[in-house]
Length: 246
Length: 246
Image (cartoon, rainbow over all chains, first blue to last red; front, side, top):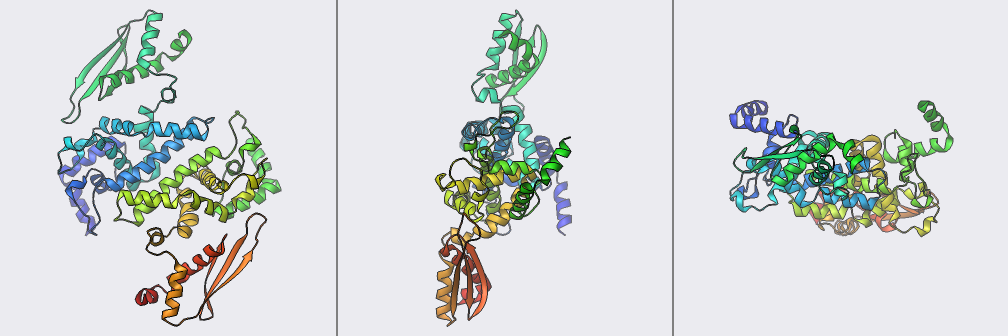
């Protein structure tokens, strides 16, 4: 009986769209879609499950916060083998800071999935980070720790974590690139365009040209961050040249 | 070559003893014994690995602390399905409190494995909890998250975590049992004996008799806790009777 219900449920077209969106976002197939639905359900709806337990993202947010903490700890442990406890603790707080999590949630445009009675614009900026944590909690419940690790490595660490920058060794890749271009007489140009994408969040896309050849791209919710992203990617392209020159 | 080295290494008798001790303590076979050796190496030895990275338990302690946090969060999430974020956060801090971790480390007598230049008695009480966290970190590195979960469920949660008590609903199982015995005219008796076990930590073992029949046991590093442990176990034996009467 339950099986048929699920089949029926999975065939509804709105669920199919949500399934595809989640799959694309997390990078693998969700098994139990209802957990992800809960991750995007605001308390204002005052929903309860069959047993009378509250059905909203708050508990998943708590779970996701804990998972994120341990996964980032494990990443830093491997990544910086000579760092002591104090350094590791400090770096972890930087990575999982409220601002950073809000940025992540905003970039993934998680707000568009939120079901709420309250107006989305009135919920406050932390909703982005909270939804991000709830998503991590949902992935843990649905697919277990290793998938959670996979998601965080791909969507958080690979894109946002930059040890050099967090340590303050590099403050701006854009600045570094400009300095390099001036010293070696190269022409660099950032081409930025606004990109609405969807109704909630405005994105900026950037192409970076070196001597008129496109070498990298960036996309983020602020022009500055999109440029920095493209600059960082270009930095890795020219790293040996830049390091010799600067 | 590395293989032969490992074989040779695993054959040394002190390593064999350590392997057996760790295996017994964690409940499954360790794969890389050197990680556990690191978990019991104090900074005072100032050891470094081949790459010049510090070789002591401090980084593992950091890793274990993070793993412990996420595993306890996951346990509470499942165990208390109607609890909100605030409750879950509060309960987790109680479970992973410094006092509690020190108790765990002391009960497992982790200090006996510690290699240090400083006198063990001068290291301070937190060493017990720190070693416990380092052990958790070592298990994570050696066998992964699911084994870590297994260990924490068996050694922390099953033995030490009592939601009723943490919530303050039950403050003392011993008290409850005495109250019950008086109301229903049963004779209860705690039989306690000191139990040295090993050189570092004194343990107390308790047998609890109800109407001269032994119904449960407890063992801990304080008489009070050993009695409480036995009382809790007896409570579950007589739970329906006790709940009807009190």
